[in-house]
Image 1: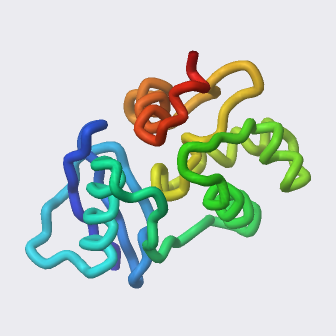
Image 2: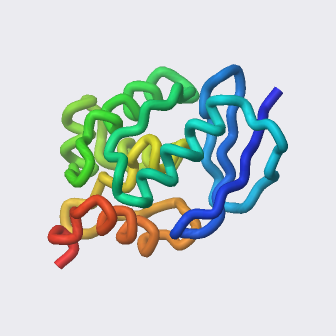
Length: 153
């Protein structure tokens, strides 16, 4: 059974989804407000609030990476990108031995945005895309929050 918790953020509403004690998804829309959310949702909401307040730079939430072995490897590589840093699709692709296009598709398939920081992956000569509500503007806001705004000038 999946649990969900709606949360307002500076980038708009999100819904955090959990199953079996792990965060399984972040959706860019307002979801329910259960009376007694499971601990993982309470912790994820608290940590996301701290992230947006500028007091948290690394999440400590059990995450359900995937689906599939490649997506798990890709997301693990994203988790290694430090707060405020970025890589290009080509750099991350070279690390994993795949094409930059495959890296871009894997970013777009990330079910755990912000927690698994796909916003820290840029094109070689552009910001690249972002599948969140607000698209690239949301990506820019996250990069600014993390102090990576110098990259945008």
